[in-house]
Image (tube, rainbow, N blue to C red):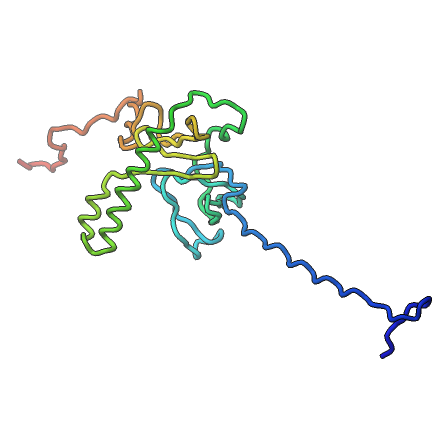
Length: 227
């Protein structure tokens, strides 16, 4: 193959080698928490869940008071997404809607509280459960001992960057915080009630009660000459 030459000097023309292409930048994995905006809370008894709007495809149930995002509705079905990106279908009628979206950046929290006491209680509950779980998996305790060690423990936390949702088990409510203050986000019980208290009975109605049955023996019909 003839090497190209310079037309003026007749010397061979030297071509520079093409620079290798730069490697493509690695694509960061998608953050499951990005874009997660809780719209509802799972009721206090938890919720069964399905892989699709089909009763023949059950999946793991949802824990009580879990914040979820309602993505779609199909009749009585509701498609939800959890903070870790996991999606499922539930009975959308049973989801508890939050009263309002969490405060946005730059908007002050109303009725704010110091987050440190609730953070400390949450961390203590998680530490106690973690220690009991370690003892259980290591064979240092049986099922009954594990049940007793974890009895009454309640904690809930969703952490998303500077935002945090904490469950306050003493008041039956979810709190939203920005690192410096907490504000009520969603409640799980009526005003003035504790989450462990039974529901109050329905008030008595003003309807007239039905008369009680007579206490005397029933009347009998007898024929002539009977005693």
